[in-house]
Length: 378
Ligand SMILES: *Cc1c(COP(=O)(O)O)cnc(C)c1O
Ligand code: SF4
Image 1 (cartoon, protein in one colour):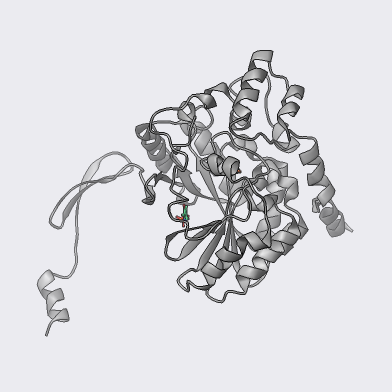
Image 2 (image 1 turned 90 degrees about the vertical axis):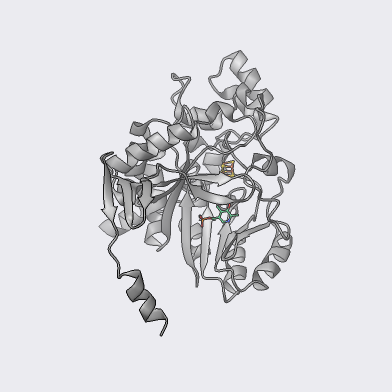
C-alpha cells in the first residue's frame, strides 16, 4: 500500500543517526581523515584545544572541500583565527551566568527561563557564544542536576515558557527528553516548552518518531532551529522538519550573521525563503555576531547588518523576514537593531522613511486630547 510504503521510507530509526554520529568527526584525531593540508590540520588541532570538535557525517557531507571558503566548512572546521582574541571579547557574551539564580537555569525575563539540561552538543559550531560554558562546565544530563532548576520554576508562577537550550537538548536520548518534559509538564503554570537546537540542521536523522513522541504532551511545543545557510536545507532536513510539523510543533529559526558564511543579501534571501517555503520554518531572529572570544574574523559591523536587514525587508515577504537583533552583553536582552524608519517627529506629525527609501510625512489622527481627557476625568 502506498501510504505504508511512504511511511516506511519516512521513518528514521535510532541506528540511522547513531551511524551519522559514528562516521562523523568525534575526536580531534578524526580531523586526520579530512582533506586538510598539513598546515590546516595543525591549525585546526590547536584551535580544537579551545573549543571541542564534533561534526556528524550528514553535516560533513555538505562540505565542498574544493572551496576553502565553503560556508559549511567555515561553521565547523576549527580555524587558527579562533586563537586570536580581540579586546572587548567576553567569556559570557550575553550574561547567562549573571542571571542564574540556581545551577543550569537563567532567568532574565519574568515569563520565561533558559534551562540547560546538557552542556554537550551534536555538533560544535566554531562561532558558539556559549563555548566557554561548554568547555568549562561541559557536563551532560542527569535528572538530579536539574532538580534545583525545576524547584525554582515551581516556586515562580510568573514563568510560562521553559526554554531548553545548552548545549543541545536534542542531543539527549528520548528517555531523558521524556523525563524532562514530564517534570516540566507537572508544573501547572508552565504553558510552553521551547527547544533551541541545531540537531535538525546537523543531525537530521536524530529527529525520529520516538524523539517527537518524547516531547508531546500537555505543553505547546516550539522548536527553534538554527539554520545559517541555504545549503543546510536538504532532503534530510526537510524530512526532519516535516516530522516535527506533523507532530504539531511550531517551528521557528534563528540564524547568526557570520562574515564569510551568510553575509550577502543573496545568501540570506535564499536561506529565509528556503526556511519558510521548503521547511515550513518561520525565520525568527537574525542575530548580530556576539562577542564570543576568537570570533572577530566572523563578525560583521552593525552597519553592514542593517544594510542587509533593509535589503531583506524589501525583498522578502513578512513571514520570510527575520528580526535583526543584538543580544546586549550586560544582560540588556535582545533588542532589534534593524534600520530605523522613523526619522523625526513634530507633535502629531511624523517623518517616516518608506520601504522605497522616500521619507513621507504621516499625520496621526486620533480623538483630540481634550476629548480623550473628557472621557477619563469627569
Ligand atoms: C534569548 C533569551 C530568551 C528568549 O528570548 P525571546 O526573545 O523570547 O526569544 C529568554 N531568556 C534569555 C536569558 C535569553 O537569552
Ligand atoms: S549547537 Fe548551539 S550550543 Fe552547541 S556549539 Fe552549536 S551554537 Fe553552541
